[in-house]
Amino acid sequence: MKQLKRGSGEKDEKEFSGDSLDQLKRAAGHIRYLINEGYAIKNASVFVGNHFLLSERQRLALVRSISPDEQLRLRKEKECTADQLCGKTVHIDGFNTIITLEIALCRSLLLKCMDGTIRDLAGLRGTYRLIDETPEAVRIIADTLEQMKVQKAVFYLDAPVSNSGRLKSLIADVWESCHVDLDIQIINDVDRTLQEKDHVITADAIILDKCKSWFNLMSFCIDKTEAVPVKVW
Image (cartoon, helix red, strand yellow):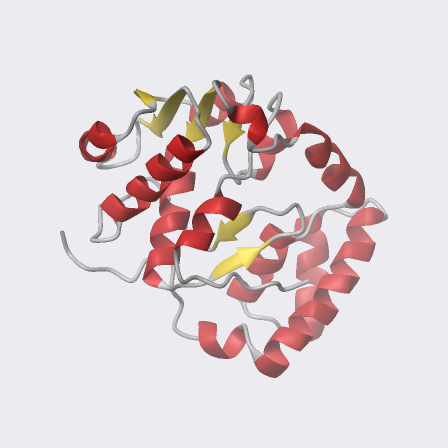
């Protein structure tokens, strides 16, 4: 597998530290006010981003990190604790979860978001390649779920995304030593499927708002890496 530094940006070190990070946090305050007043977050990010002369990557970081107060309240109400997963089946947004951990292992940019999730700035856009960090990412997920005594893990992988079959095979190989039951499904509409489930593992905002319940697995998995997510709000 070819070594790639997944999720990195050429100017990340400059744009997400020091004075730039302080400016991002000021911009975040303006965006948060606007979305709590009913403005769409994309419109608010354009208006505030233009004012603060933010890059597209900085604007995307704010959009992915910030949520209106009511949305945060509803997500918190549906969030499960680790104890509640004992003996249960979890439903995992495969690419969303694995890519975030790959990025953590690559020491690329991760975001600590207002709803407690960890998100990245990588865009899948229908293409995916396994990298050297992929097996370790899957292993961390397996070990963490086993420690929580989860009964079964169901991974959902997007059929239209390239190499979904290869990722399925890798997950199965890594999982052989894990005592959590495994099911891997390659389907066409992962988001819609997960929106109807409980004990969902994802950081996708739309899924979080519509699913029955969810668990913030990344907050546990990230601690097993050297990654330090950035807080831009």
